[in-house]
Figure 1 (cartoon, rainbow, N blue to C red):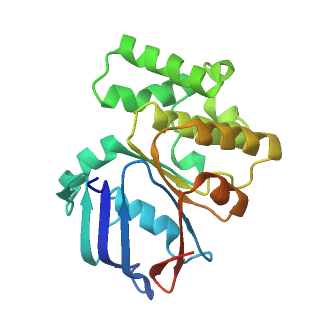
Figure 2: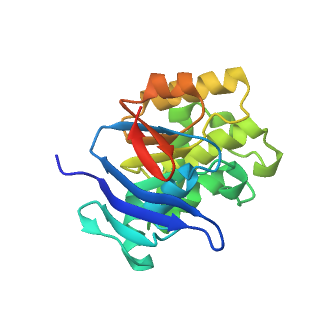
Length: 217
């Protein structure tokens, strides 16, 4: 099968700092579940942001969904097909209520208000979060916000789901619920996590990011 993403010799550095990525190679094919781990500051979150065009590599090539992606316009189509769930849900949720946050992406994809409402209801039911429909987002617990951020991305029906430390700071019941949700998904996954049991349960391929490069393991 043709890869969904192919990253070749990717280099990246933040201004005034040593390189974070120095020759990353990664190919992701449909149905794969990729886990990436590594030390804090090793570039794991940077890698995910590069894949959806929130950052740009200093060198290297990035193919996504069959085409090279270089400039902002190229990534519009990528973001419709690959959804990034940020490590901090507060970076992702900005509408007054849960329903509005989840409807935001579908509305931007061209759904009518009626279609978006149906998408919200379907997504919340799929995740068992119907009780949060009318809740004020900023009054949710940290775990609830994490689940709503995931729902907001899933409402856009991405082919690839990119997850940045999804279980960070979750209590055990919420972690178990999130794990069950992710296990039941059929999307291709790229998971960045320090949570070894989570990686072992979800992933089919494991990589370690160290010294700017990915290595199997």
